[in-house]
Image (cartoon, rainbow, N blue to C red; front, side, top):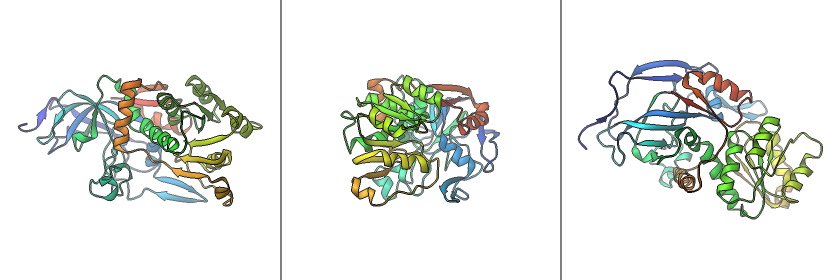
Length: 364
């Protein structure tokens, strides 16, 4: 390949919405179109999903409970363009970018590590201690264009709908990785599991569980509209944890006892509920980052022989596994709300206040 390949109007500007201060609305910015160097690839964005993690970045902290927080001050560069669920079309390639072509439609793996640490060398770039994640450590998808550092982070869509495929980067990958952790403990095919939370992750997990030929799931959710969406998505039952006798109803719906729980909320209350539901030998996987703290009776952990594991996103290899599964079994059909990029602040507000069923996807 000789020199940079271009398929973009030189007059096209980068239009993006950037975080300029924690707790502040994103601000629209325009600048000249980026020119790729070396192995870089420029995508014209087709779709960008809105994730709850974006809210934590915009707020600037994670709640640890008890009045404690993890501050993101100094960890998040500003100004920053959030957004890490991206599909796009290749419009420019640096001189060292090989393996793909101009015009290819691709999904971008946002979990980009330093390539040198122990986690990265083990293929677990999502656990890198010096990450370069799109939308968190470098500019992401709340834009019309985005620069990807290397073609290895791009996966051809091969005909997949870019509006639905965008959410596979995080929502899909996160749920797929969590389900694999459950399957390592007890076969998903043999017993129904419990899923706490019917937001974008919970609804996505129902679909991926079907693709893995799972026995099904009982969903625990406080919002009536989201419980209805869970039932529409194939849940065995959808139960309000605040109703009388909720724990008994959950166990009954799951077949008499609960061997596995995935907590997609991640609050003190939901983590405790998940642990309390477990039968002896059961496993709780905590995914959500809502925040808070939990107090558990320590003797019950060994007495139950319980397993508690955190699950953070998923590896680039797992994302490729998921895309291969989707190519074989079909796209997960969760509700999506397609909005123009300019509505990003309203979309984040709706997500923050629980008004989103499924996933919001932004289009430039």
